[in-house]
Length: 461
Image (cartoon, rainbow, N blue to C red):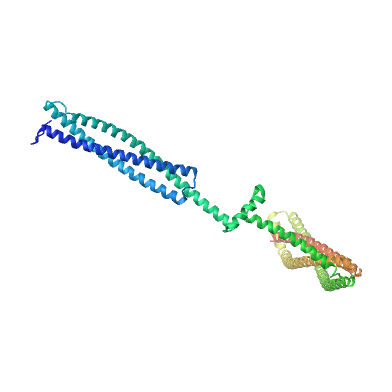
């Protein structure tokens, strides 16, 4: 290392420099001890607050606890910063001290002399200060870790305190709503809890339900008493009861009479409808008879035409067999029969035309019969509906009659009329079914007649 150049002698320079360093080390040691005492004091305060919070003592109120916790956290943070600053300053001084020691060793190697008592004391003080600083560093790390734990515990305690406070406020509000704000209300709550036994106070809702049940029982008792009191005052006599029953029976009799008039009107309408249906049935029967006669005449005409055609064919065959030459016979037959077959052809055409007209007439009659059949079915359905309605009215009438002991002549008449209506309906239904079968038979005959006419036309052509 290069030698230090200075105007001051080396011994004086070394003594001055080491004395300044010694003062700095003493100041650092003193400040370290003060910080250690402050940390000890703050640790005692934290331990005291922790004990109070854990035992939930009443020495501090809720607001004081919270403010104390916040104050301790702030002071703890300030102490941490101060310790860090002191630690940095100590490291800087230790670095300078090491540099000075290196320079001192260099100067002592250059100057052969014995160590002075001041230097020996200085070295001892420096060694002691370094040991004290090392112990203080370790103790600082321990206290720093403890302060971290205490801060975390304080934050958790603050959160629990906030939760407990909110729950306490909510429970207080519920209790105030139940019993009131006054102190005597709370005393009454305690008395009710003691009187009611193990269950204690059950809440306002159950008390209201209990009072409602008691109110209902009292109303029932009051109603019974009023009934007993009014029983002797307002007795109903037998004539009044008979008058009421007579009035009810008169109203029922008026209803039955109106129903009877309605039934009579319906009966007249049903009789008129029955007459109309019978007239229509007679007309339909006459038309059916005409159709059957026409069908029989058509059958006779068709059979006569078939017989004439057969005779004509037989005569042609015999004429052809009488002549020797087939060509001559054919020529003579065609020449000789040139007049007679033309007459027969015109006659058959006229008959076929007449047959077609009859078929058209029969088709129109069949369509009319179908329409009449549909009308009959609609009338039958209407009569069945009226019959069911009359039956319901008759049942109502019979119930009124049995209840009020009316004469039974009207009931027998309604039963007789209803039976007669049922028989008429059954007769109409049977006639309608017979007409349907007859129409189907006529359709079959018409189709056969049309086929035969078509066959005859083909043969004549």
